[in-house]
Each structure stands twice: as C-alpha cells, then as structure tokens.
Image (cartoon, rainbow over all chains, first blue to last red; front, side, top):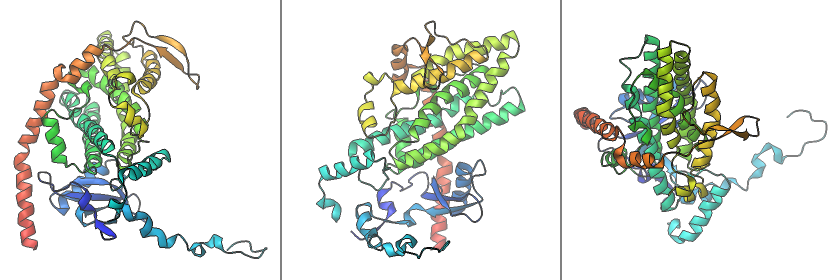
Length: 108
Length: 320
C-alpha cells in the first residue's frame, strides 16, 4: 500500500441514487481557516454549494464555503499514520523552547 | 501492507487503549466489527428518527394559529431535516451508502424513535412535542456529544447547538395556553397526559433489559445508561410542568430527595412496557402511516433524482 490512499476507498459513495458525495468546509469569518463540517450529496457544483448552504449554514455559521468531491480528497492511510509523521518527532530544535537564553532577555 | 502483519488481538488492544484514553475513533481507523455494526444501527436509527419526526409536526404547519408560530414551526421542521442529514453524513463514513440506509428503513430492517408513531391531534401537541419529545432527545444528545466515534460526536455537537430553540418554542406554546382560556388549559393538560409516557419511553428499555447497552457502554458509544438519562429528564422536566400549572400524569410521582445541586429528584411509576414493545414492534397508532408516507415521498421524488442524474451524465460527457 502506498503511503497515501484515496479516501473514497473507505467511504460508501457510489451515489447510485443521491448523487456523488461532497465534503463541506465552512469559513466562519473572513480571515479564518476553512473547517470541515460534514458532507452532502449533489449532482453538480452548484447543487453541492446550495445544499451545503441549506444544511450547514442556517444560522449564519459561515461567510464562505468550500465544496470538494469526496473522492478527490487524498489522506494518509490510517495504518501508517505513526510512521508517516515520525520524521517530525526527533527535531525538537524546531521549537523555540529548545533554546536557552541569557538571563535578562525579557521578550523574544 | 502493514495491517496484515498485525493480528486482530493487537488491533483490538490498540483500539481499546484509545477508547480508554478518550481518543476519538475516526472512519479510517481500525475498529471491531461489533463496534461498526452498533454504530451503523444506532446512527441510522437516529437519522431516521429526525426525518420521520418531521411528519407529526408537519401535520400542523398549515393550521398554526399565527404567522409567528407558523414561521417558527417551519424553521424547526427544517432543522429536523438538517439533523437527519448531519447524521446520515456521519453514518455514511461507516461504509454504508445513504441509499442502503433508506432501503433498510423502507424494508423495516431499521427502526426510528417509536414516539413518532403517536398522532398529533391538536395544536397543544406541537407544544408537548417541542417541550417533552425534543427535551428527551436533547438529554440523550447532550450525553452523546462525548461518544467515542468522531463523526457521530461532531454531528451531536452541531445538533445540540440547534435543539435548545426547539424545546423553548414547545414550552412557550404550553405556557401561553396555560395563561389562556379554560379550554386552552384543558388542551395543554390533555397534551401532556398523552405525551408524558411516550417521551419517557424514548430512553429505551431498562438497562437490565437493553440488548445493546453492554458493549455500547464499554466502547463509550453511549456515555450514560437509559435509566440514568430518563431520571435526568424527569428531574429537569417536572419543575417546568409545575411552574406553568400542568400536572404530570403519574399518581406515584413524588419528591424523593435532592441532587448535588440541591434540585429535587423524584420517585415515579414504571413505564407500561407492554405498550412500549407493541409500538416498537410496529403496532402503534401511526406506524404504518409514517412509513408509507416516507416511502411515497421517496418514490414521488424518483423522477427528480433521475433527471438530476441524466443532467450530471450529460454534463460529464460535455466536459470530457
């Protein structure tokens, strides 16, 4: 198995009767990151974005939406999670707290 | 492929260690079959309940007593549809398609909350449903926000944010009627008389008789038992009834003590379990009607789905 797999392998989303599955990301305020909220079924982009609006933003939860076809999302395979991220774990010098500072430095 | 190197026992131990450490299980993580099956059953039943629950309330949209109450009821019912969709979305992460879930509902293989098999006879019933039925649902859902399955937990958080409006609108209807004419007061009392027990039944059988409680508690799918949640609901709701002058239809109801916050706790009669099982097994007043309506609405929408699909295929071939 390659390190990354297409997430559609593990989700039922042939969409036989309801249209393909789309993942919904909401930006709650301008300037903030888009956050995953759930999914909707829709037959095209326009329907996807309208369905997402009706299902996920009935109370002004968002100022913008991203809709992504679920089968286009690439994710790390669950079984290889640990080894995939392993290279980051032994490089503590990437964090500011690794460094000693002479006494007297107030802010850095 | 790494997975094949790990045997089932190791995977199960890792899974249970995560559960013990309160780490959420995500769709792509390994999980025991029984855990997946329990979630498939529970989340889809929950989703179906939201959608079927639109019917008894929908019955009163055209007859709401004011434009204000009609707008509110429409918004509430739209929320219920939305909640169904959040939950189907969570259920689909378990590897079962939405079409399959709906088919199981239509074939009677999946259940929904029995409380929706009771009829809504008058406007006071809309008040009683919002206050008692949504109130019971919220008690359960607040607890489920801490469920161990990530997508289910996230759907619950979203739903709980929206539900408290539902309960307040129901309680406001009851309160207004109790402030009104003698006839209105009688209607409100009649509504609580009919909805109190079905609302208590929503929490399910006693823990000792519940086929699903054991593993569900062990794997933290459920965080509190049926009986514990039912007690919480009773303790919360009885004072609300008394405040507006409604009598809870239970001759044996009496204060038994106080909880850690100094609020009263209650002794009460047992549920009529024969009625409970009758309704669960399909013999409630509206079981047939509810399912038939859902099947019909689904079939009536078939041509729309076919058109959308034809449009999609056509569009794909143009874009290719």
